[in-house]
Length: 215
Image (tube, rainbow, N blue to C red):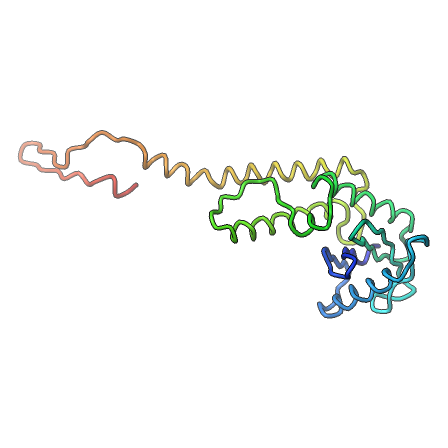
């Protein structure tokens, strides 16, 4: 079982952290720091897995990692997982990110612009919304690969297909959510014929309300 997935840069700053075992937030931060120091001191020409740090379980767990440019992708797993299998899984995850974001890099995990339109005028608000969307999309991809510490899918094409389907669904839901506002706007723009305000039928006088106040 996968206990944690950690992605941090060459300076140890976390870019993606997902724990599948409950730890207090303070301990999680300590695990990230400990894992970074364990991985950083290893040479590039030695194997990509080692014994887990003391905070995450010591010899009962393994740290399996790959180093891409400025990012370390580290999976902490128990003895039931295959080292080579997890190395392949990391490669699938990175290739999927690369496929979805086009030549993925560290900035994509921080500042990836989602392809959906943002109807926000203020630049700061637009940036915050984009950041939430891109961060959410990275987690969508991860959830297609691993959920609850269990491997769900290892076929990159299947993962990309699911992400594209999710994007299409979100766009269609966005269109539906805007439909009521468009309907109200359309009603307001309808040119109704002028209706007399008073109707006299014999001795009976009927006052007609102004319909524009209800639109």
